[in-house]
Length: 141
Image 1 (spheres, rainbow, N blue to C red):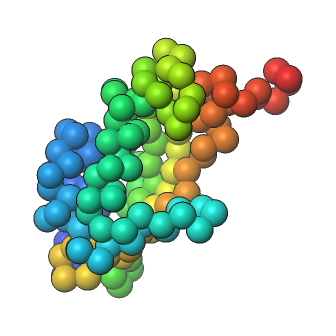
Image 2 (spheres, one colour):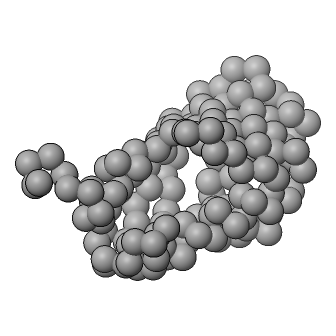
């Protein structure tokens, strides 16, 4: 696939997440897909990715991604995104607060044969936890 086709696939990935169309992950992600998270946590395959995203959509039913930038070279696409959300469901044991917030993130997506095969993602989890009140923000504690 061309660099431009890879960028189209990367953008579609976020658009489908915004639509809650998690069934399409089997089409967009290879069976051997690996999502590398900080701390050595890895998500393997479309089903584990679907489970992770279902957890986020439960905690943040209005979660929406906005792709700010897509930069591509070779088989990789870098996506810089922001997300907007309201904390309305349990988040890893943190009860809903009803607080609204926004998070920034960057993901490097590797695409082979028209499918996502790897992702390295970083997002501002500290900022999210401060916004929902789970961790005091600077000057608040």
